[in-house]
Every structure is written in C-alpha cells, then in structure tokens.
Image 1: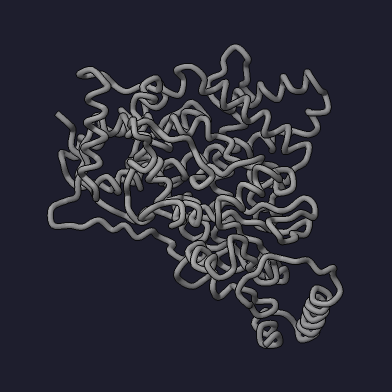
Image 2 (image 1 turned 180 degrees about the vertical axis):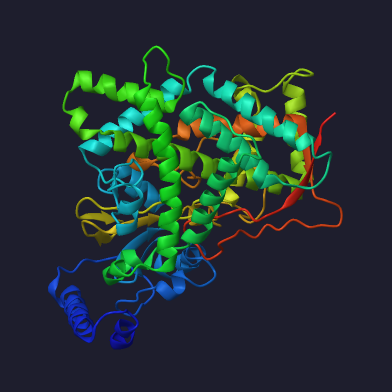
Length: 506
C-alpha cells in the first residue's frame, strides 16, 4: 500500500525508494520508539493515511465527530494523514482546555501553507505564542478600541447600510442575490474601518476582491495535502497554487493601502485602523524600544489583513444566514420587527445604545450563529506542554481542534437542536440569558476572537438597521436552498446562493 502511494508522487525511482524507507522508518519510530501516552480514543485508521477518507467524504467531519462522541466520548483522536489531532466535542472538555488550562492549549498549529499566507507567521491568527504575537495582539486590541470607540462604529455602519439599502430599493422589488448586497455592506464597512474608503457595488476592484475571497473560501475545503505530506511541497497541487495566488492578490491590495498610510501617517489625522495600528506601535516603541525590532511593517500589514478578511467573511456569512433563516421563518422576522417598532419611535433608527432593549433581535443572532456556525471547527490549537484532558494525556505539540458544531448541536444541552428557535436564549422575562460554553462562535481563552467586542454590537446594529427598514421574503413559487456550500469542508459553513425579495417597510 505504501509503495502504491509513493508511486503517485512524481519523483525518480531512487527518490521514491528513499522516501519509502524514510516513511517506514518514521512509522516504526512513532509506533515503537516514542513515549507512550494515553491518548483519547477514536476510530481506527490506516497508518500514514489516517482518517483522510472520512475527512474528505460526506457528511462533514464535524458532524461525524458528534456522532462518534456516543462511542468514544467528548475527546476524540483523529489523524490528518500522519498528523495526530485531538478534537474536543463537548462544552466541559472545551472549558477544561481553553479556560482552566488556557496556557497549555494556547499554541497555534504551524503549517507550511499558513506560513505562506502569513509571510512567515507574522500575523495574529496563525502565529504561535511568542513575544511578537503577544505585543501584536496588544497593539491590535488597542487599535480596534481607539478606531471604533464612541460613535465611530455607528457612523460607519449607518453609511454602509444606507448605501446598500438604496441600491436594493433601486431593484423595485425584483429578486436579488442577497449575499452580494450583504457582502457590499460588510466589505464597505471593513474598507472604511481599515482604510477610510468606500466601494460602489459595480466597482471592478470590489467585484474582483469579493471573487477572490469567495474562491479562497469555497476552494479551501479541508486544507492542503502539502501540509500533511512534505514531498508534495516540491510539486504543489493545482489547488494549492490557485489558493496561494488568490491570497497573494488580496495581500497586494492590503500592502498597497498600508504603504500609502505609512508614507502619509500623521498623529493629527488618524481616520482608520491602519492609522491607529501605526500609532499604537509608535507608542509601544516609546515605552520599550525593543518593540521596533519585534513588530515590523509586515506584522502590521498582516494584522490589517487579519481584521479585514475575518471581519468580512464571518460577518457577511452570519448576516446572510440570518436573513435566509428569517425568510424561511417569517413569523420570527415579524417578531423582530415588532420589537423594533415597540422600542423605537416612529422614524427613529436603531443605535448601539438600543441594544439592551432589543433582546429578541440579539437572540435571533445568537440562534443563527448556533445553528449555522461559519467556522464549525475553529482554527487548530497546539499544546505548549504535556498536559491532560479528562483522564487522557496529551503530548506537547499536539494539534487540538474545537468542534463548535458539536457544542452548538449537543442534544444534551439544546432541546430540538435542528430547530430555529431564538427564545431558547431568553429568560422568563424576555432578557438575554448569560453566555455559556455551549455557545462559542467566538471561541474562548487566550485564542478567542480579537474582534468579538466589536463584532457582536456590529452584527446586532447591522441586523436591526436592515429589519427596521426592509422586509425580506421568498420569491413566489420558489423555495429557499438552506444546504451550505462546501458541505464536506471542516473549515467553513458557507450560505448557498439564494435570491430574495427585499421590500421597503411602510
């Protein structure tokens, strides 16, 4: 079997023989020569190939893991080829890892592909825990808070949402690709947040960048074989070459904008997150000159890309899923609009200050994110030392994946988990219940989402503005497609293409 696999790789006979010998040696070493740990159990997998067949065949691996939990327990070991991965599939196991043993599980898996995308792990998302990451995360948080403090987030949201609603109204009630318009709304919001600029929906650069992000999301699937089988790095697959090309195009866009900000930076004229990141680094250098060699322009540019891509993709997909769910549940859409009408005066637009009084609107978002988590299995962690999970032993350097899908669909926690029922997040007085570890779209611990404190009010106000002004419905004679794209992917849960009627409310 090993011989047949090796023959599929384009190498000379001598190189194939050496590779086969190396593989046998590694398998022997890992089988007999290493310290034995009491790993969490999991389904049997053939050596070298691991569970690649299960990972790349329907249903998606995050759903299989929830099913396997009945047999193996909440912590399950699977193999991405030869790469071992411990998956956590219950709120208790995730709480133990990310909260009680946060330092142990705070590492980030370093892969060849992620190193390419992040210019050698110079961003926040893919970097492992080190002085550069700690300083960059601190600067990133400062920049977000400064840039979006006060009414700044509100102003940018009003501008982007108003622009999109005007364009939808121009369609005169015709069916529209709702994700395209939501993408414009979110893209413009992040374009304004990051670079103080705005796009029109027909702008060719906007359409190209949007297409680049769509391609990267849809084609990413379950990652790259190059990360699992190093010999393929000499002869990358077409998929790898294509996705790296799309990321390079987007990175060039980010770099061009960042360099303009760097050349024209002025403390007296700061308008966006890029300006505030440059200023935060400047202030950090005054406190500690060593920061100047730790945080370079490349680190800051990569961080801007983190904020832009993460902000665009997660937000647009969450709002799109929410609109689609409300179209298929018009009675829930009406409840949201009734709440908005009761809380707000006639002609009054919602603001961030109204959030606490709009609990049902918030509950709808919570339920949408529970039912349709855009990242069903979050980015993988690694253990920074030998540690444990329950009764099991986890070696240092082990890949650990959090199965958000399993938490959000746990039948022991959520009654009828397949049902869209926002009331499950409200108490007997109609107020939002406290957040639990069984609802974790932004993760937790030292690797929680950098922008959570901005994203949650942003999502709430965006949805409130849309539903305050517009009613969404299904075109006559059509049904909504609610099956996500990239069904076999463990990376993303992408809304399918749907056309909806968007009408101005009277």
